[in-house]
Image 1 (tube, one colour):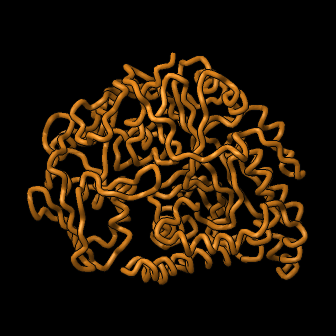
Image 2 (cartoon, rainbow, N blue to C red):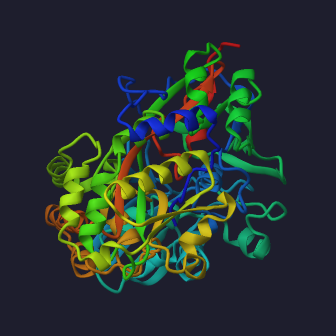
Image 3 (cartoon, rainbow, N blue to C red):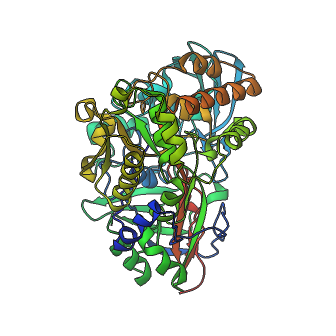
Length: 546
């Protein structure tokens, strides 16, 4: 469901300096410390006829929201198809297409729908469309979100503008999940007619968002056209036409930004940051993100079966250097397997845990790691540990840093470089993965709620639990059915502490910030990592500069 890796081919400058991360020298080639994190970039004041925005991972396979769970499709679809609830750029969850909701008893959620919403073709959004949309998400096992409907017993229309969801058992995560594509709403009639072509270049979409699907030139671009009848009067689009392009090469993206061929992008290439920072062509902003670079323990019976080996490897890695060099100063070392932007309702409890377990700056602790390994039987210590990373400069340097750490503490380590275009097969296809021990991931949560992160990565049925880890299952089910938020937060912190103590099923990691660059003629985009589920482009507009 969530992301594997940001596809960007870092330049020679990163290659040349990345090795310094292993020696304790950490040049700040990125935005660097001291640059303030912001939620929103300066508000746009002028209408703009057209802009070009690059989606850094290249062309999507589909814009069908039910089958979109990655940066590229979500960045586009989030401006077209809306959810029942909304997660705002400041990581709050609020009503959206559902004007309100109620939980009259532990097994019932009632959603009252807005009566002023129309699809792009002018048809009003009704309870029939919402029941259809939610049921499609629930029943389509090929989609990315059906597992989040696991506790649903029924979805019914209980009024022209009301939908009621009955649960098999209490689930206090489900409601907030509707602020992601779990709660997406599409037009029933259009979607049924489009059939298998829905979301394809020929089939298109029919949704309610601030931008309409304007066409798809395969291999070139996808166009979004401003919805002149958008229901949300507080978020009227100022840009009439957005062309989403698919450049993935760092130098081409940087050149396009500097020349004005590209007006803006999220995930600015690390190699281009020094030049873009000092250019008067535009401005670079940073925002908070629920993103974390981690390694998935994919084989619970393999060379990392012993928890002390996992802990020793985590201690030996130069996370400080990785954050400073590989991620251009945007990476903050963390021992938790969850990004802080996802702490949500358990912020107080998880921030206390964060302070408890993050007692160093992320520098390698070789002596401590070696001491830990002395208690591990030689036969276990000598097994070869395999790590797969995609064939990109960033991830190769990350892999080399891990390999160096393993070798320094006497572990037998094998780094495997897989083609970037097929890397996701290791994450989602057990046959491709085989007996691999570790997998690189850059993971993001669906909503700012720790139970979302935990159920996806560390509960038996989780869509991103490659190693079938199950040790927190009972606690998770207790937490998700607990109405009292304070007790639920305590249970979330308890689970996260257990994952830290076991260093399983992931080894963290560095938290990343989100970055966005826009040329001087436009502004308004959220700086935080919210573009995968929120209509961020509706904030874009002109500055009056040329």
